[in-house]
Length: 302
Image 1 (cartoon, one colour):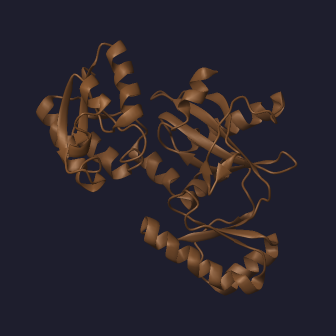
Image 2 (image 1 turned 180 degrees about the vertical axis):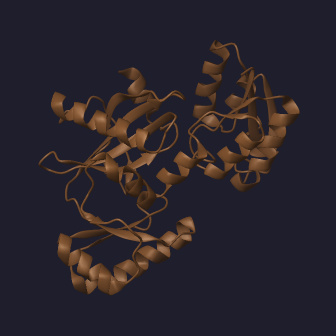
Image 3 (image 1 turned 90 degrees about the vertical axis):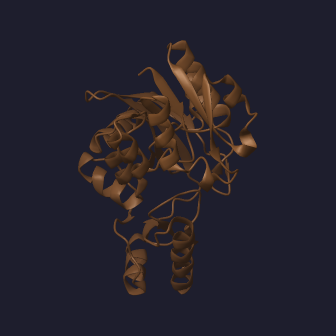
């Protein structure tokens, strides 16, 4: 690649552009009218305005981004994180235009973008998962039956999206119907997909994620863990590495499991596999983030 358009702004755009410059590759910045004088715009070799400040009119305007790639001769696109970084349709459009999408393939993004599809994908790889039902559910009778089988408390989760939206903890049968309807409504409003499923609720969990890297030749490695158990409203507040609770044996097992998750969906590029751990140090596959993680500098430091 000789010229890369960075489809993002702020800190991550600057980090990508600095690396691009070290590699002797030209960079193209995109910006909204509100970001015209931002550092990433001034740093880039070229910069183009996408439109009005609203994200929908600028950083989420896939057609305009691809059009600028063609106009300026950019042969690669780096999405950074946020915005279009986990949009499989955008990745497909970039690829169809003959431009390199610097990230995972669209199919892997689609699989891991759905928690239910992700669970189905890794089933045959002996990766531990939280007990529950691995299909969309909207029947209250079946939900109650499932809850009684795995035992309360349970967690109702949206298949799409994240950030705690479409998520409800249920302690008893009497609350199940109301909380399920709330989860479905919130999932539909937030993600356009009301699919929810049920898992056993892991009380006082630790949250540990593993950074993985995969090339186009079938080679996948992990770069150890980041612990992100300190959270507020399902948003990570502090990440640290190495985790103080992992033994060498447990770190090895979790790293191997993360590599298997990536292998299961033919993953390429950088990604993060997230696990929950209970108070007995049993770990369970949670999800995979199919992009450069915001917290990747923690891994760079170790």
